[in-house]
Length: 341
Ligand code: DGY
Image (cartoon, rainbow, N blue to C red; front, side, top):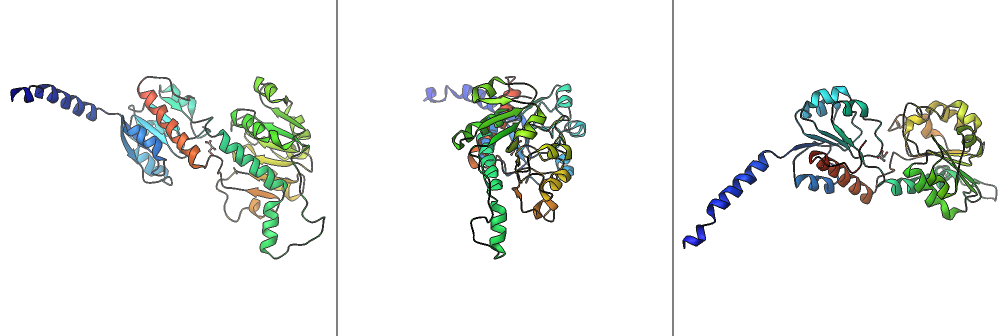
């Protein structure tokens, strides 16, 4: 009989340990209830998780919720600057954004304060490359224009009506041959592209392996039949596609942006499309974002526009959520982040 209870002191000890661990679990703020559960479930194995109601929280609401957490999981493009960090307070050890892009983060300031910071690149490259192909094709084939005419009952017949362009035989230019740019080139391999060219800071081994030629920015503008923007938004790239850039492009060029809207001067793009300086544009990203429903770009027949859907697939968003969570756990356990900035 006694034997049955002889393990009791051990059990009590264990319960005390569990209680201690629960009390001292790190606290995580997740900024949206729309965050895929893959990441949340992972965090819950080792942390206390607080989830904000949804992604349209105002800045004020976010700042109100922020103080005292060990980590913040950013499910949207919430700006992380000195104000954010001051409000978060000295407990904050890691900021993890569920995105590849990090132009909403003041990375130097976050790091200066000894806070770790991570993002989720690579896992979204396939999804974004697919969206790129979609935009290249739909802009080149005038899909939006055709659909609009169909809705207006203005479809004509005849062999010269609504002719588009082909990727076959074209020169495809990539502005920024990072992981996404490289994945785009790989996806396009079956399209009989004549030549891949790219520009960036320097020639890349990956470019050589893909058979892509490193060129200057001006050469990229002048030679591309399809020009795809796949570079991050930085002080260097902000507004680089302006009037002067569009003036150098071919009149038959298709311009595609899957990176960040602010890399392009929107007024210049509107002028280029309206005055037929280029053939068409395919845009997953815009400035502003989202575009107001009455925006000039939305009135142009040669602009194919979707509302920043690059990584919006179930598989990719689950992967992004898991990696963003793993970045937090690693940081809190003193391990290297999966992807750190
Ligand atoms: C990112 O993760 O930066 C992408 O823009 C999301 O689509």
